[in-house]
Length: 405
Image (cartoon, rainbow, N blue to C red):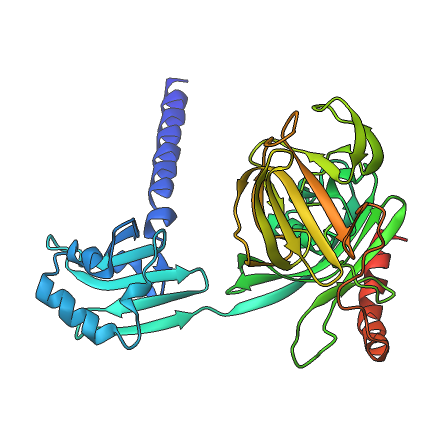
């Protein structure tokens, strides 16, 4: 019995030794992994990553790597034909590859102006420089869904860059108030995304087609260039009607109408009944005010009733005016484009709170902007309609398919 017990102990010891040896023979894969980037094996260098700070220049950056003034001058002269040292920008990345000895001599410097390219300055033999541009692949993607929260939240759930939401908001600025989309409203988008080296995501590239369900109606958007030579893109619905209007719907991004155009309104300051020949949009003080169409600033100034104001002439027919500003950001005679910020919301003049009073003239007469049927910009020419219909047919079919319409 005692002999059997000793045999069991011996066997356990042997098994333990064998297990220990087996574990020790497994290599540490993490430590043995070679890191390769920019065409260099980082294991061969002392690697230092740094970012361009305010006040940095190319010269000051390499001086920190024990390169003296006269060497900096020679290096700048040698690389200037390929690498403009003045192009170094704050926030961009430098990678220093240095010798592994105690001197840590700079051997290679890599500068990345963007994710798709980088410059290599090699100091090892004689100074040389070259630029590498990584291949970019464009991938098409189609998404569709129903709103349960904001549109931006839905895109986030689908793993889509927020830049797409910004693109769509601009395209539909004349057709949809995104703050009035309802739960259950459908949407579909066909767009392209950029990938560097086929794997690194580099953002949204272009919008191919889209639709939104808005107030029970499907509103489509298709990019199309009427003049193929110029390539200028505008967006149209499925019938070729331009989405972009000559005028934006309002001078503010966030619309909160507190008083409409009327022939008789009780004035809250003057305490009398009088006409109100404008539309009031309430917003916090400092909210940007946009010009609703392109034109020339005809007047800027201050009056006791209007407070700080700007008036813009758009063409021979239309003019607009923006009242009660806290700040005026344009000058008389200045040309402005649609959506330009011309001032900030305030409560100057006869006003009980921060808002902008938006006034609209047609042929010299003040009219209700909300009731006008305003012209679209660049309507579809009849000769272009067949080409447009042919171009959008597969896109519309794909959108309708993913949404099961």
